[in-house]
Image (cartoon, rainbow, N blue to C red):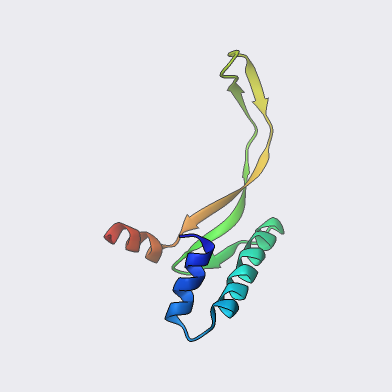
Length: 92
């Protein structure tokens, strides 16, 4: 489902206009990365959690040369589905 399909689906299930729903979804999709970038976790009970996670430094091998390389510490985003979401997916 792309963004426009999401807007259409939400607008069909509410009495709001597609323009209003589009603005709300756009604002939400802007707010989540801002919050996670600031170090906050974004949680919607039943849906899931988005937070930052620090990947430890590690040693790996270059696939082309086989030489050992050092991979630095990196921040990444971790998304975890909520229990209700997981249960709904597993029920289908």
